[in-house]
Image 1 (cartoon, one colour):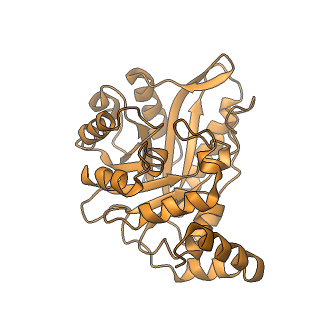
Image 2: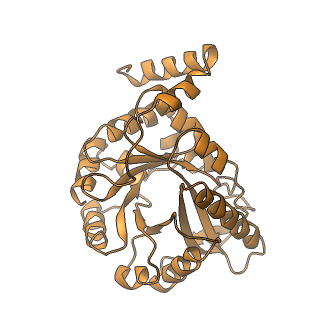
Length: 294
């Protein structure tokens, strides 16, 4: 594997120009994970699907995720750490990682609906512009993730809701994980905000658990909020904790993650910017701390 971000970027571009079929070969030859959880029985999944929705900010850096060479360098560092079990991303990022040989032995999840662009007037109408079930299956990946934001005052919500239900059906039929990330959302001064109160998150968990004609392969991806025991009592579906925005107090964040990880339905973490762009830029240290919580 090339050793510097610039060398990695150059090799990827040359391969995409001269041998694009290398992506298909790399997917076919990839060593697949035997389980979505690691030896410790918990998943540690690195999320990197933000750029496709135009969400490039990490903390105080508004365009942090816009530098692809730097992002891939951080991802490779994170995926190489013991205890990291998987990655979540869009096709462009996952294929870059395939070409770099960074996905062997990892559970891989394709991000499906990225059409609800950050800040757009139609943001709640979150179209499926990324992976579909056939694409996830053909690449030999382990599942697909969808964002389900429910705005009770926006009549574009039902379209996204119905599209997520169809995706849940298709993924379950293919025996692939359907990872659903639900929120109750609303607009404040024209900006979509997720309601992170315990009651709202509990309601979103209950709604997401019931979509589709079967839930056999459905998992939830939920934020860590107050009263997590009560929140997750609303479902028996396996749950992954999401990291969310960068915290000004990472130690407090780790403590909240650690407490939530003790709940019976919680099967691990799915974290992106909090680990890839920590305040001190020590990706390895942040990932190792998170893995230690498992």
